[in-house]
Image (cartoon, rainbow, N blue to C red):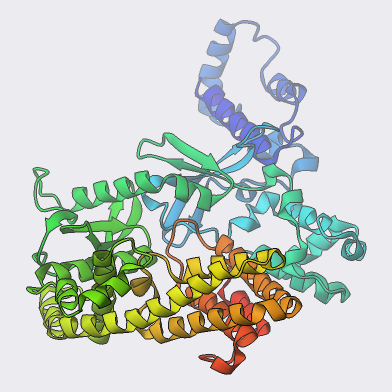
Length: 553
């Protein structure tokens, strides 16, 4: 009968609510259900046939006579639990994700699971997930308060009371949970609390959201508590999904037609390259970022999942497309301008060959000219204009760059000779520090990595290294003290890099901090050379704090 199917459905919903709320006391017991039917079904109904006969007439008089009501299935003491506290979906901007629940202590996905389609993995962020769903939010806040160091925690007991007061006072998901919680707790009691005082590792795993990445058929590809770990693990598959979405969006009715992604390009034949590709797939908005990609002897158009990756690829791809079309090889032209003696002096370089060094100089020169002429660009007319501007000055600038690099290499070689000549065992840690610094300053490809604008600074850093090596034997303690301060800053910088999304380009403002540490070395070991700008360990720490991504801050 229909009433029985409807009642079973309602029972299942309440059972599911128990699963979501991680409780076994929400659904009423079997006696309550028995009493419901026993009061309504007459005593003379003693078989299936009797019931069918009675119900045939009764349902016309009162169609809902045997229907359960949701309220009667929920225990009074659990009445405050509602489905709104345990939603079926999670929204983040234009994205909507399915939410499921598992009450299985010890299982990896115990708790709340948010299902993220692979093709939108590049768009979803950590923002808001730290607040959890409404039904578990108070538990999360309580556990965070309990995770505080004891000298602070003792001012905020009992933790559930403070958790309740906090949630009554704030609007959820407007800022990171620990930021809001630290501020409000301090406002309540006056005892200082910072976001860093909370220890997420002490929060039970079932209170942390599990992210499950699924394909278009909702099949699980991977799951983890850490969204960035999943992004890194599934990056190749995510890019394939974006490519598939782009192909489907640009193909004609018969499935054919030009694809947004191309390979084997040796000239700009792609019209205007869109900066953002958008389509819909499986009801979700898909977004990707097209860019030119350097493929060695040609250029391709590929889709990237972030603007940062797009920016890096587009620069290199534009540079390659320009270089492929330059009629005169600037590296060879610069090489022909040098005497054999000059070439011999340049042969001792980190690249392993003099040709690789010249190519590096030409690439660095191209980068400078592309920047000077407003590149990279996104349409054919702008590319032709950019190409003409770079071509006009590339050979001359490459020759000048080789001249600068000659001086840099001479300074580097002087450092290498002095480093090898300094052999005191007492100086071993200091000499290892210099070795590491030189390796960082002068890798293969250092000209392009450093950039023409910073080449004079590189020269100054090398001169500073040479002066430090000269002074080191007579001032070991002073050198060691200064070196330790530099290492503190290097450790801070290494920590900053750990906070950045893995596998993504390091932002320019973060790279600049690393060069600040080289300026700090100059101020410590060769103060008379001067620094490019005021520098100190405090300034570096302040820059690091400002560069920390939102959730890590």
